[in-house]
Amino acid sequence: MKKILFFLLIIFFFSFINDKPAYKIFNKKGKEITYQKILEKAKKVDVVLFGELHDNPIAHWLQIELTKDLFKEKKDKLILGAEMFEADNQLILNEYLSGKISQKNFEKEARLWPNYKTDYKPLLEFGKENNTGFVATNIPRRYASMVFYKGLKSLDNLSDAAKKLIAPLPIEVDLSLPGYKELLEMSGDGHDSENFPHAQAVKDATMGYFISKSLIKNGVFLHFNGAYHSNNYEGISWYIKKYKPKTKIMTISTVTQEDISKLNTEHLGIADVIINVPESMTRTY
Image (tube, rainbow, N blue to C red; front, top):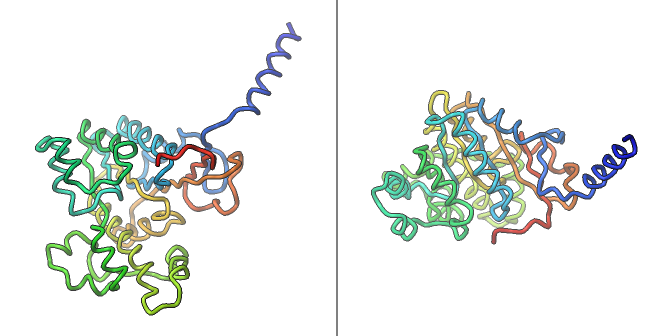
């Protein structure tokens, strides 16, 4: 009997070391944690910023799983929102969610990302079926483009109706924050070099503003965005704290590594939770 048990343990051991996990989850200190830990923490905050790599299937799968599980806990206290929908599409989004217009018309008229059907449609359809509400948080891309080419001051010339689709002006931008500082360095030494980080900041500010406006008592706002917009507690997180300082925020980031057994040093501390995915993972596009 002992020999049989020993043999089974050997089989289990070699099966384990030869396994190919699709992902591992770590806390900000690099300690491996379980998905259940994410859910437990997410239930206790006001905002969850789920930072994804846009083409990463593991991130998209965990987004819908977290949405389903949070809904079981929070019911009508769960609100969804995403970078992938721009503020001037909120009307058509609401019309679709409430059943006033068809799916065909919505998908034809809304400016949807190329990977919408595979990566974001499941989230929106869940929100529709369960009446969670879904907030289009991002600045209309034409206004972010204005900032990129003409600077922040160009927003002052917009109409009052247009300004309602953006965070309140003037938008404060701290170029000493590492994320914006990196973009500034990437943009070179030209006279418009600040436009690049400013264009990023107006997106972060607008997303932070519309999230903070949508918070409800004892609710959780689950927001989906590119990881760069919330890594290192900057970007969206920084602006939410500007608009509502007491907001409890949980950040999630997604990274890829050749070896996911241990979190690389450069990824430590970038978020409360880091989802580590093999670099060889299939991309969604």
